[in-house]
Image 1 (cartoon, helix red, strand yellow):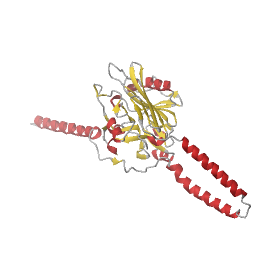
Image 2 (tube, one colour):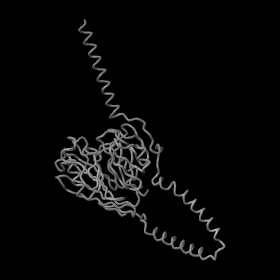
Image 3 (cartoon, rainbow, N blue to C red):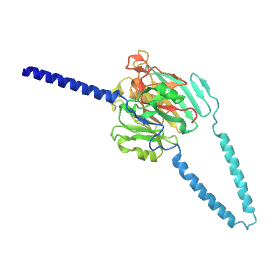
Length: 353
């Protein structure tokens, strides 16, 4: 009798343990929550808002002082007023010439490997290195607002997943790659000027920061916080990593990365050449046709492109490049079939701004 009681207890305990474990796994990796609507994000900072917020007030004060000074000098011969008017005319002429030199949007000129609308210029080149197919989208944009991020379902939350192509199409993206799959890992989530999750303070984690002026930086999670970066003008923070190139030099080696970084895999990365000049890089992998890259090989390849800074995005089955309405590479979900994996977020180049 005692044996039966113990067996029944063990059975019930086992069922409960399995059920609880299954629930935790489903909750963590499968079941989505309602999330936060990105149309109403917290603490949003508009592109360029920090500089423009103070300029109008300063300009108004300057204008008031100018009027006052002119009234005090109104009894003079008028020569100074004439000189001022002439100078003003020259400045207006200079401004007109400057505005004429600014890029102007035009109807897009599109081919299978290029896009040009006056504000966005993209050239897609396919390389064959390390027995792997690598796609490089060279990007030049007229204004930093055109480099954006998008979240699956336009919501920030647990397990809210969409295909890279679906998120990109919803944003009318010209070009897109997957981001950092934030919902499957820790790290800061700062997107389009809104801070959704702060840094993890993990000493080994590095994040890519893209600022409102189009410049970038790589920061240690344990040395930064979201509010400070927001105040400094950060618009995007991608937390996957690691940094591949910093100040033009390789920042990874063949021995200092975790085991998975030394394995041949599909990869996705971001390169920075200069303000408003970037590249998205995606490699195929896990097939007989395309073996994939080790992290060090990816870094070497991007250094060969001339990148000043480079950063590793989520790879493996997530690695996807979308260009001109279609997926360019061959994503390998589960390493078995050529199909897109659903992800939590993308980095993309927008249509106008």
